[in-house]
Length: 314
Ligand code: A3P
Image (cartoon, rainbow, N blue to C red; front, side):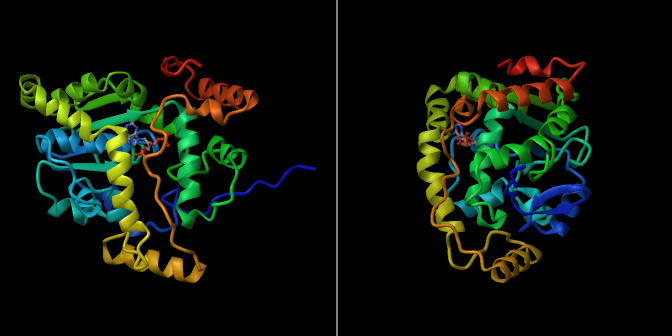
């Protein structure tokens, strides 16, 4: 008898599976948003190091000022599909917008800048599994890794197929307004990655960091996983675990999430461990040998004709 697997709950927006709390209006607004020339986008497939990169970029732009609170983070580096483009219009400049869209849906201008962070699909899958268990709207708190593995392999998770997403941006990795970087590269030499990102944003940021050892040390400290685990997890707990759930700041978003939670009788989470292991290779603690083989076969098949699989050979 085949085992019936548990699946998280999603909604379909423009053909993409999405977190049920997201407002289709905000997603539509994001896709239709016309970037300004000085817009910076931090684009990732979910769980590939988005938040870390947002903190790095903000620290570079603000010359070492950390986000003051989760609200400050949402305003200064908004997640556009979640909050809608209105937030971006009122953001202080220069600003960095977070999106999770594949290239063909992401707001595009040849003058805007795009930092794309890619991560080993196996670590991404494990991280996404924990994420999906943590946010109660997925109704997957008791889901197993094996359940989620199947969802991920079928591209049924939020924002769809990992491999299609990666391919869509990989094709643009050499564009002058795209910085394609991997989570693993950032982990291996974070200082070098910060300088690379700074140089991509503007040579003056890199020059400043190179001339000010204390500043780059401060940024390294404030974007370290230990610092972010303490501060961001605490800020997110204050924000998400609040009885008045105010996650989507746009009126459409607030209405959406409140009604959804009320109707589904979903409890608020007790804790937020958004910054979790923050390591390379945690997949080894979750994947069976068969799952690892299956994923590599899928990876090679989906990316045939490219050299992407060489990024994460095992
Ligand atoms: P793990 O779940 O593997 O620990 P995103 O921000 O795209 O959702 O990515 C989340 C992943 O990035 C999580 O991975 C999280 O722990 C990791 N992460 C967050 N902050 C980090 C940091 N400062 N350094 C390294 N990894 C970090």
